Amino acid sequence: MANKAHGSSHGISLKKRYGQHFLREQIFVDHMIDAVDLTEKSSVFEIGCGDGFLTRSLLKTPLKQLWVFEIDESWAEHVGKTYPDARMTIFTENILETDFSRFGADKPWVLLANLPYQITFPILYRLAEHRTILQEGVIMVQEEVAQKILKTSGRGYGFASLYFQRYFIWRALDKVPPASFYPPPKVQSRLLYFAPITDPRPIPDEKEFWIFIKRCFQQPRRTLKNNLQPFHYDLSRVKEATLLLRAQQMGMDDLLELWKVLS
Image (tube, rainbow, N blue to C red):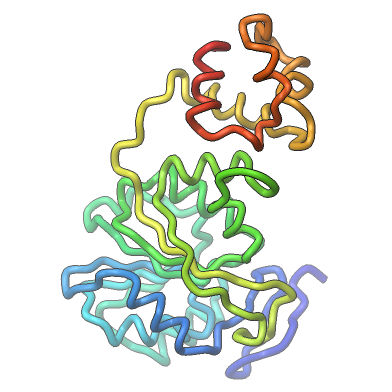
């Protein structure tokens, strides 16, 4: 069954389909909170509160309000009853389906979250789309995902690296071992600090540019020429030496120059 439990906490079953692995090391919560600037004027939101391990620490800090998004009604109810606080509002809904316009009146927001690993990238794409509401944040992600976001060349570097580095400044924080969670995941985790880039430089025909970037990295071990040949680009306009490179050997500036030649 998709909803199979894989342990329990506070008498509530943990559900595999929601990727519920709850942090159990206070030091990492402290580091998340220390990395951001929280004041009594701060609007903070959390995605996936679980049993409230991070939530309870957030409520001990000076903040104006805390919005918690928790898809699992059992945990939403548990956290509401266990940590009652007039500053906290709990939304029992999927963050991927949330109407982000509701954040507008109280922006900028700080995000602190131990993200469900199976939907990390969809959440990050939503945050990029609505980055004007954000001030900064710290997220817990799978180590492999963190490396994809941070890479600037070589293996693992690709569309995600370029896309998320365009919209956010990133900084690697603690590496978090599986034993720091209950139940322990099968992977290493990483805390990442991020802040939106308020004025990213313009890219001509940006929507098409990102399609082009996906095509450049379609087969990472293949040359640009082999990856781009099936499409409508006029490759005769590009130097042969460039076409023989792999996309992984090129930075954002190089790829932008190539795009300007081909678009």
